[in-house]
Image (cartoon, rainbow over all chains, first blue to last red; front, side, top):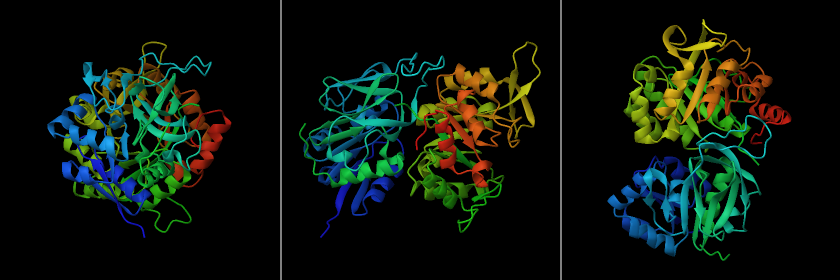
Length: 223
Length: 257
């Protein structure tokens, strides 16, 4: 018998979460998705997802205003937990955005901005300047075997839109990388946490597969 | 391994129906934007843009329902343009499930609206549409100006300066349409697209004038566009999006296949 799995999508006022919720429901019709800022609902959920668009100062500010920091940290320590985009960056120690913002410090490392004079070293074209934000479909190289990569081909394309990227202190949590002027860490795995810089909810079938894998995941992973 | 150049089909929507005539053979209702979007998604479109050309205010609610429906079942980025004039318009489209809005004449009428919208919702969801026409130039270099009202009304604003200004105001992307070439099917205005793309840090979408697949290739290689937008060549099923991508891949352009 299949029992339904509850997924709490944390609503902290950072962007529209409609597509994240719809994509989760689409990925697994047994998933019961709640878009919520209710601490009890988040604490009781089987899976917790931290999404988000916007700036880091607003992101951390809203989490504080809604008194969600401890709830998020507790979920990230105890159950299958996923961060997306700014929700991935917020897991790090510190971001250089908005003149410097302290983040949740769940995964050690920094969040930095792409350099203004970013160039593609892999092409000899005179016109190899790269635009910022990094916007569109780029390939993700899976650096580790992980339950969330199940049934997703190596170097599959996912949809990105970001100007900042994570730099973990040690290479251990790097689960996936892409190339944009230089190698960029775009997926993190640490115990029961998985996080992506790209947007699974905008990455068509590959994104839905990743969400399906997240809902199926029991949170175990050892590097 | 590199970022793919995007192919973006554009649907002109009037009172909730796709116009300009869509002739897919195996679609039940050719004018239903949800069905057309479904088709483009299954063909591998990288994003979809809806341009609401509904003239009346009352008819405009329908585009919201279209976006809601499409966003509920198609999981690629969606852009909505046409008649976005206030922060409330932006919020309504984003809440309906759009990822980006394209701001057109409202940016010309009130540039601060772009700044306000970008500050409120983030640069990533603000696309500024640049509608330009070539005008007389005093130098050897070509010159373009911003036109409004479907290309009928000159503004005297230099298109390159305007593009830079819109990026400094917070535009996360520019949608560059040549009003000389739109609908003519002779290809993009490549010098216009290239000059803007080389002068701004944000991605540029080339638009207006696509008549065949080589025009898409030229838009990227000659126009330095990060994405190419087309309407009629896909609507009339002259080419599928898959064919367009394979053609670009043959010309060594990085695409998502």
